[in-house]
Image 1 (cartoon, rainbow, N blue to C red):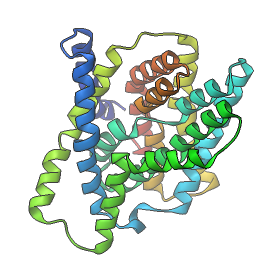
Image 2 (cartoon, rainbow, N blue to C red; image 1 turned 180 degrees about the vertical axis):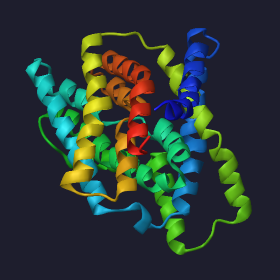
Image 3 (cartoon, rainbow, N blue to C red; image 1 turned 180 degrees about the horizontal axis):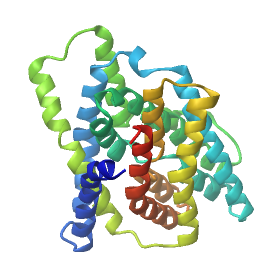
Length: 309
């Protein structure tokens, strides 16, 4: 495990540098928001397009992969929802807590880290995990909260969902990249070098932004956050592993990438949704903080397991 820790440590060290910069107010909230926007709309999108453009849909898509990942997610989603209801929280809060339990930081942390650590062949499985998270679960949380508040479903909700997906640069980059790859044309050398140069900024920029954003979070309901971190870092990869290895058998390498992706800490976009709907944002914020800090060891251990380390 030590060799893997030495490989993952620089990634978490970059998060730590961002955190210290934020705590020292050297990198304030406005600067963090600007950096996050740059990574989200430019650097990470360039990286995703470049990866997708060099893959065919057949290399990315597998029904067994989709079903295995969804199976693991739904099991943990149901457990987290059940625990939330047992504690007596509302439907909206239960939905947000369940989202914390299954949505990892695949975009900002998983894509750059897993591709570097597990090889470029990991790009396809990671992109598929990211697409499932964005399309299925980001849509689900919107549907649940809106239906709970309005007491019904309407066509307007689906229009909002569709527009949200069309405006998400990560989804757009993946779709456009796969469309380019489907043509069979190679990306022109100048364009490929441009994408590589811009995409190279995604890894340090995203990791620094994660750390800086964590600096402004104040812990609240630490016991609930600890449970959600446990669900995300331990239960989620365990359920996904069972789904990929037993229920819907997946090719070993792709299964390993899927399990590693499932072990990532709670994603920052869950906080964005919680703040947008006004549902337990501080609780989500604390879960992100706790899970990210703990993931230094748990993600390292998971990658060591899936690589036979």
